Image (cartoon, rainbow, N blue to C red; front, side):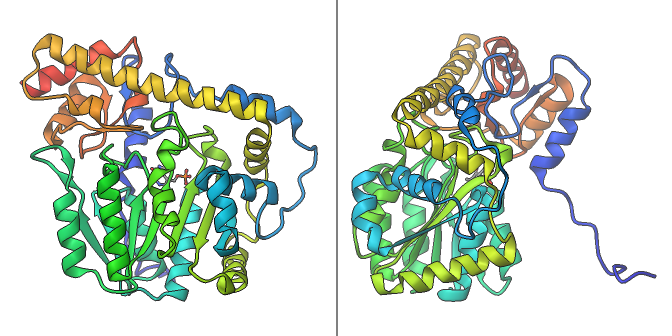
Length: 401
Ligand code: PMP
């Protein structure tokens, strides 16, 4: 008899189960297309050269950061997100705070919105990064999680009409809509600009609160401004109140250092002191202060013109390697005349490809070929290398025939 006797075991998250299965596979030819972590062309973790240069410049002490975070980092993160001009223009209405990575930013933002706006519903894309729904569910099961259809399987494209219909039909004033700023996880499909603008129109018309999650700025296209377009468009309108959870895991390859920020754009500058103090209180209750190491690295790189330039080169290196692996996989499939159409592999953007492979095919890839991806058919493209891409294409060819 224990105080915990009534607890039931909960299945582990698929991503973690997959990582375990891969670790336990002793076949030297195994290929991991599971975890969303960038690897270089030899399949190794890549520490960015710009980050390597910043580390020796860091101070040799390990004090607590203030509760709002490392100020130069918070400033730099907002300039990166909104751009120099816009972030200066928004300053009186914009509140920013350091968080424990993108996940922590999503959580702080969710708790903040639950306390302040008390939304009836939160709208999450179907499918989405699994943590969006989980964070809302754990923070307040009373907020109804609703899902807008994001993926049109027939055309392998963003389901704009379905999204519009869901929001027009069901969203209520004060509801939150979670949007991924670029390189949507897991589909790799983003709305084109005119569709973003139409979604912003709906948010305005219905009084919804857009809550952006940006985990791939610069990593997706190689261009930090291009990848921030949607966030900036919503913020520039002036009429919308916008939240943004920002992660530096991918674009700085600082996954384990947990670097992130959360931003709130209010319509009314008078609310800024209240917003700031509420955010600090949430941070206080969750972690007291955020981790210093990664935030200092990011601030050092972004504030030094030379290092920042090198970081832009690093973003190009990562994004172009991913693009070239997409092209190589498509080329290999076409060469084999693999049944079906595969052009989506190159039109999708960012870390992932939603391949269209079904559960059985994914299972067969793991069991027969030691190639691992999510059951949804989501493949993490950086797991491909010039060395393994032919083998992966051969295996895909054999499971779809
Ligand atoms: N949002 C999305 C869409 C993601 O894909 C990720 C990383 N998988 C994150 C947020 C957060 O990652 P982290 O907590 O490592 O910053």
